[in-house]
Length: 480
Image (tube, rainbow, N blue to C red; front, side, top):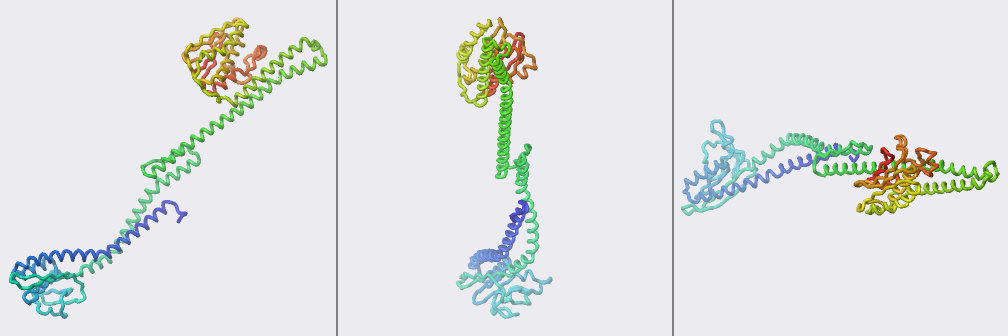
């Protein structure tokens, strides 16, 4: 039974329950019907018997006889009136029902009073016309009540009323005859009801089960239909909510996995590029030192080539420092707390060193900062990002060129005069060690990491930015 599916199991349980209820109901009807019938008849008979006695107390003998006969005929009972030493028997229940066509012969199916077969009891007067045959059944059961009263003449009288229980036996026989048919009908009704009930009960549960099987396979179209507000409907709602939460968690995990994969790939690409960039100055320094040590050709002039070696070493040190900063950035970006800081005050500290560098290189640098503008940014990380942009602008602006730093609503804009970059260069400008003009970039001291670091910082803190050309050069915009 435990291995059966829900629908047949529910159907069998329901059918069994209804069959048991039907059997118990029929048994109760068969057992209780006689008791209820007898109690009801006895209560009614006593009530009417008492009313009859009350009326008889006010009548003379003739009226008593006629009234008693009417009472018997109306209520279909047996009665015996004891009056003035005489006994008058009245019985109309079966005389009326079993009369012959011409009303000439009658028969009793039961005799409530004492007597021998075929004879009326002593001192009994035949009050019904046409009684010719009396069939006695002494074993018949009756309900009896008797009450004495005093006539208007002061004589002691009594009225005894009996009602046969033969109809109860007949009714029980009828119930037994009808029992197979009623049981069959109830069984058919039970089967139909059990089928309908089981189908209605198990259908939503089956639907939820099939839907969860689809959910197990991560079918994103799977959803439980909610057709009610009961516990099953609540279950379907909870399953849907749980599945949505699961999909959301899976999506978030997938995004994190993709992000980690991208970061790892970026690290690999960065280390490859860094290795390539470091290899060139290291090879150059090693080559010059080897030739100076061996006194080969022009490298005998140590006074000329030692300063060049030192310059390459300094450049290599700066490049290593930038690489270390970039590597550290991959692990700590986003860790600095975002604060509300005055933008003008922060940028003044960042820009001051570049004003001196621009003046030294013969560049015109104009700065217009807001007096009152507070933004929510990570101060140190943001300062480093702006510093890299300014360094890039100073390095790539020719002597006599123009650099402008200003704010426009919630934008920080840094512009510098230069040859605008072509679209194919802009696609790779934020990649590590990328230089639009390699020969000029190396000679001017650029490492190709400035814009890469800036992009990493701004992306980590979800700060929007853009780097686009305009008619006089390039424009870097940061949006708050």
